[in-house]
Length: 245
Image 1: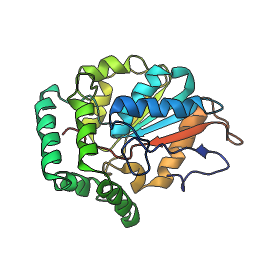
Image 2 (image 1 turned 120 degrees about the vertical axis):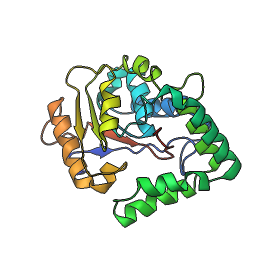
Image 3 (image 1 turned 120 degrees about the horizontal axis):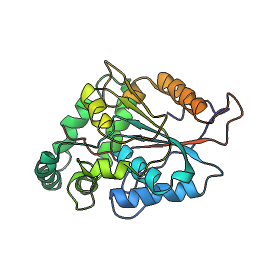
Image 4 (image 1 turned 90 degrees about the vertical axis):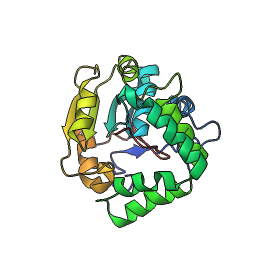
């Protein structure tokens, strides 16, 4: 995505999450990832356009709610939240299986999720998965859906979302993802769009389209056509764990 963003319009900051390849040290939990992102936001010269994909959308939701003055707006892509509360036990069993059996327990999910992507982009995603230890993936999965402070399932997502104050653009590859987003309270000016025919990594399937949508969104919420280098985008989502189905 950084290659697709015009450097004359964006100063892009990618934030590898704790436990991911090149990521910060510390526990592989949503809470620690949120603290990592907030530290980045606090070091920026002005509010950011905060972007999160899949699990990263849980991180951006919480960072946004915690520090709304540091956020110009938020963009979430196939967010892994507002899931069925009945899936909690399934997620707990999956996390235990990942710890026991290793990456084969998630290989099918990521193979399916990367279908439709350009081959180089798909290989990069799968390489990141293969470089991430199974314990990290299992830890994030529990932190998303199983731990007492997890917000990935309803109604916990709805409660956390009430803290957001800036407009949220949500992009979806499925009607189910749009339905889950519609269950949340969103600030005025928020919007949802379906990218029909795309997969879970829709922004990487068509990075040029996503970059255009991102720029249009920023213009709607305080950005100017040029010279907007002060507005930053922080793409998140490496070391993602699967969304509940």
